[in-house]
Length: 196
Image (cartoon, rainbow, N blue to C red):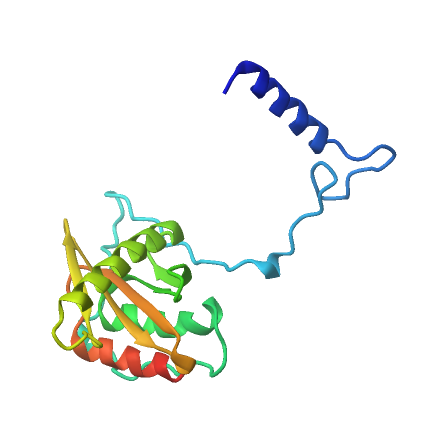
């Protein structure tokens, strides 16, 4: 890109940033653009900040998988989105003693996420796990309808599997933690999401 292109881009940017002649910027907004409607965005909970070495309280360990109920919360029928799936993902995260859980839609885009992974990290991990699932299904002699993959990466284990929601919608579930996700947790989650 030449310097004349950059100058043109700067000039256009300045022109677009200025309010039209005779108009004043809206209150609480910049450059006359009203603030976005917050109801149009999905909010993700931020993971708690790690405690410093000087903290007197030790971190509370997660309960073992056996202590978690194998009865996930019901998923609201007919709904689709972060608000619908967050409770069941939170249950799965606790039941598997995982740090994070996320759900990808049939297009591979993030639908919902809970835990320590940032949304962009969850989506990036999920995209790679979708490819791994496809490869694992291709290797399976029976078509791999109930295929799960677990990938160890350093101290973390990423587990992914697919579930079929009503109307045949294929969703990909991913969990990141210190261990592989037990089959019982995967099956309970599969049953819960099949009723969504």
